[in-house]
Length: 107
Image 1 (cartoon, rainbow, N blue to C red):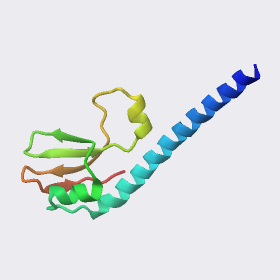
Image 2: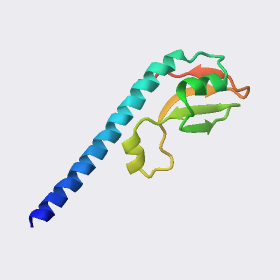
Image 3: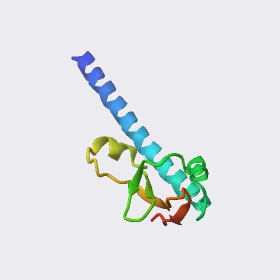
């Protein structure tokens, strides 16, 4: 009986530590995105943006030439939510020429 209680306690401790780690990592990503987005300017090339922010989580097409870039920072939510239409922060709009057209404000 004692082994069972110890085993269950270890499992719960590992689950708690894993969940806490994912939440903290998500907060780190969110903080870094909010800090780094201030370096992005209209007219910057795609390569510069990727160097600063990293690859976007998603590049969405729109009715205008170019794409909208989103960045997901909720790591735990993205693992638990199986919604294929899940969208992170809408960060910027890229033109067809590969240059930033608009930088959105994060709230």
